Amino acid sequence: MRILVTGGTGFIGSHTCVELLNNHFEVIIIDNLSNSSATVVADIETITNKKVVFYEGDVCDKQLLEKIFNQHQIDGVIHFAGYKAVGESVQLPLKYYNNNLMSTTTLLEVMQQFNCTKIVFSSSATVYGEPHANPITEDFPLKTTNPYGSTKLYCEQILKDFQFANPEFSVAVLRYFNPIGAHCSGLIGENPKDIPNNLMPYIMKVAAKQLPQLSVFGNDYPTVDGSGVRDYIHVVDLAIGHIKALQFLKSTTGFHPFNLGTGNGVSVLQLVELFKKVNQVDVPYQIVARRSGDVATNYANAEKANRLLGWKAEKTVEDMCRDAWNYMKNHSN
Ligand code: WQD
Image (cartoon, rainbow, N blue to C red; front, side):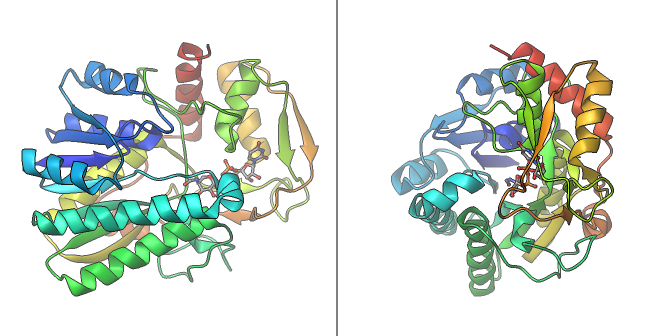
């Protein structure tokens, strides 16, 4: 099968391309490199010893999409491309709504034009907002607290309405919890160009002495040690979940949301201490005020993905800490 991967040079996209190639899919990437580098294409090819077709461009560019679908018999799409910084989305909501929604509607128009009916969409646990309980199942109420999260929620609704109107389409929506870690080769991983929003890349820049210390956003939450609790999942486990979702879509139609998480909650302070222990590095930190919009706890019930996709996260938090640092040591310039 030939798969178009939008946003394929990004953190999760690149790891998914590796797993696609390892599973004998052919891969075509379209990415505008707004938050990644073209060197990732070569890294993917080095890891897998297989070739990738790469188009630098924007998924909102309908002519480019039509050119790609004209030149290649695309059997399915995995749609990662989109802006994803929560804080920036609050400052620039139109940037997020225009890009994240238009890319999805444009992609669906072209897929329909070329009778490509299988799509896996990169969603996020952020669509659950502040859950009323944990672990979270897919039937929990959906509500968002920032424009980034809302673009994920609205894209899910667009996909659901589109699939209802076009029953021959098969849609899997994957709600990621907190992806961290890196491929064991250390060639690909998460290395944001600016000051990181997310916890693990921030920890790594402090450990690499690129930032002075970590700010822990609050230790007065009703959790094991007062700091926020999340469901951290190894990015390779997450990537494999996309392969399983594609294989599931081969034999079914409909609209199918899935949680991709480990089912275990880990606190900020627990992750920091584990990272220091596993990698024998220091990570100085200070406790500061809570970050607005944060929830105390969220972690997944991933039973549905296990039951229908035959998928389960295998890697430990220790693996995530070790692999993330291994990548950072190779890219700390
Ligand atoms: C994790 C924990 C923070 C940074 C977001 C998006 C979600 C997904 C993942 C894209 C929280 C604490 C963090 C720091 C800290 N992104 N923290 N100091 O907020 O769970 O989820 O990123 O899909 O959609 O909502 O992830 O890594 O930002 O925070 O104390 O410098 O670490 O308070 O408890 P989050 P995160």
